[in-house]
Image (cartoon, rainbow, N blue to C red; front, side, top):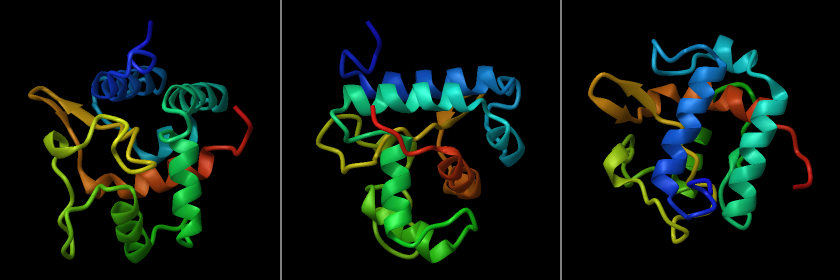
Length: 150
């Protein structure tokens, strides 16, 4: 049984990050850059997204995040105002100009706003962390996610 099927959303998010880093051969670096996201295999990305959408009953997944991002006017070109609006919409911000949640403050259950997960955090020798500075990479990831029926 997968973490997603069991409703273990934090573990599922960390597993997603581990798998994506392994597929992109970025375990050593611990984070995905634009180049590796651009070259991430579409089939693997689709599979990861479909699992998130399926087990969260359509609440979580990259395609859910992409739909929200695009509804705010988001495109592949990074725009800080749209990114902040997206952060507000999915519950990644506490309010204020640049007050983004710490990794420890992320909501890992189905009460989280739609699109709240996956976060796909980065990893270093001290553990998992999330940094809003990686927003450009996430925007590129959204551009790679195809819209399809699960």
